[in-house]
Amino acid sequence: MAMAVIGACVLAAPLKGQIQSSIPIPFDAGQNVAPVFEGWEANPDGTFSMVFGYLNRNYKEEPEIPIGPDNSIEPGGPDQGQPTHFYPRRQQFMFKVRVPADFGKKEMTWTLTRNGKTDKAVGSLVMEYELSDLVLAQNRGGGSADGATMKANKAPTVTIDAPAQQTVAVGTGLTLTASASDDGNPEPRKRPASQSTRKPDAGPPPLVTIRTSTPRTQQVVKPNQDGLAVTWTHYRGPGKATFDPMSALVKDGKATTKVSFSHPGKHQIRAYADDGILLGTADVTITVTGSPSTSSNQP
Image (tube, rainbow, N blue to C red):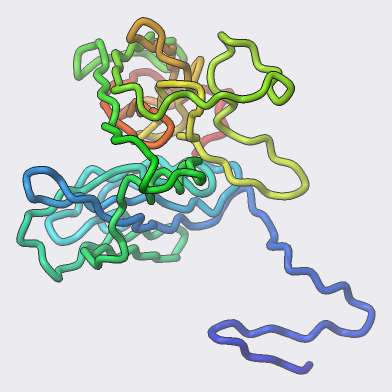
């Protein structure tokens, strides 16, 4: 069989009668999770924040990779606030790691290992990796924004109106309420009535796209265009956390959800307040007791 080498890829010439296709084979489970360095932000106090996301190569499975040799950030780790629960596909701007003002030319590495496959994301303060407001706007749905016309924007603030530590049994719903505020920028986008069939009180669009024959991105914290919204995520912990709703527009400064868990253990829930471009976060830790739910197919 003839072989052609292009860069680091080896391509096999198709046999006569075969159909050549460039569509990747999607896998629902069993694949690895690759960390991603998104870039860095300059903080007002002179420090910097390294921003990370990830690509879970599974289309359905949500792996749990505990902090340790298989999920570590160095230097200074292994635990620097990274997630251990990974939603399917590409998730951007999920967390930040603050580094000192004199970090200079050092590098920060997030290492993830799953099913024998190790991936690393290396972050540095290279100028080209700076996440300016314009870069963030263009990455989160504000592609028409430009540096000359976009208004100054501050990240939303959010707190969870509950004790930092709570306990609940497997399968029992727990109500969580977030208080969130924003500076009003960017303003909600005006869409022609002919292009919108959503009711005013319907909340933001669905967060997870429905899988069709063509694989799609499944963003959990999907850029919201209808005003300040809060998205609830399962940040750490085994099994599955189910939210009802997972995302909602903030009304009178509040957004509420009910969460239940399939597995016992210590779980971290992270609320993301999203103004459509910038994010604010708040966490709560919930200890779940009891036996795993028999209806759950999570490992």
